[in-house]
Amino acid sequence: NIAGLSVAITPAATSSKIWVMYNIHMTAHGTNDNFASRIARGGTGIGVADSEGSCVLASAVDGGWNSNVRFSNSSINFLDSPSSTSELTYTVQWVSPDTAVLYLNNPVDTVTTSNRIRTVSTITVMEVLV
Image (tube, rainbow, N blue to C red; front, top):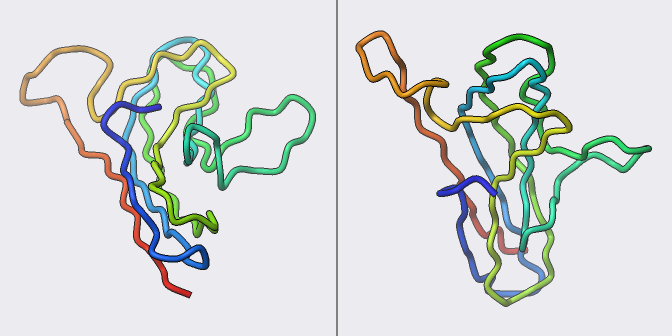
């Protein structure tokens, strides 16, 4: 899970749907920088592709070529049908089949000079009554 990108909600009815939205900004550093992101409910990926072979399952792909530094952003909207009235926790997860080192909202170093850019990432959930 990506630290700071989680939110809890308690649906009013089992027929309610939960609209999950996230927007993340990240940097990857390394010679192998294939990485993606996904929504998770209770630690399990949801809103991901169907399983095929040994592919990594994700909600959105963020990077995928060999370079030294890769900047990316990712946004997704997903309507979940949890069939629950218990508290649900949604998180954003990074997934990578490679050895990429991933940084959220900042460049790959700790330099804080005026030529560096910092961003913000968010996750929002909303109950949709049906």
